[in-house]
Length: 206
Image (cartoon, rainbow, N blue to C red; front, side):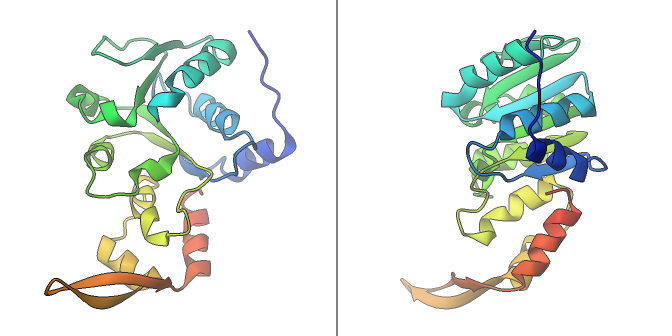
């Protein structure tokens, strides 16, 4: 079994979030979010761990856990199988919402790789993931907003921040009504209270 040796900034991330069971690690590519998230998952120590990632990353995550976390039974969840013992279940964003049995999971850790994939609150994947009932949440992303703070809302919900979408937009998003085909549609033209937003995110484990 390969031994995990963390770098200083990775250990610092875990130390800063040691009192949180819902966390977000927003680190640039190449800074080792995979190991930060995996080590946090190990510390949280639930029997079932659900990892949701992009389809192209399924095998990478599988190899990662098989190499460094051999105490777990690691499976790529392409079709329904019995989940028992200490298990890591890996599934992609496009498939997860087609697996309603996952809504029955409880007392598990949910990890989202590239958590910006749930930025669209009306997408099936996002609606499904927000219905899950995890005990713990780990969000990983190098580009959590892509510069668009309105895209953070669903991630804030997963972190346990109980703020309505309307209150979130009223507090942090600047909009302007524009006439589009006879409809008054709010268009984002800027942002406000961003330092406050970042402080709230830190408060909720980001």
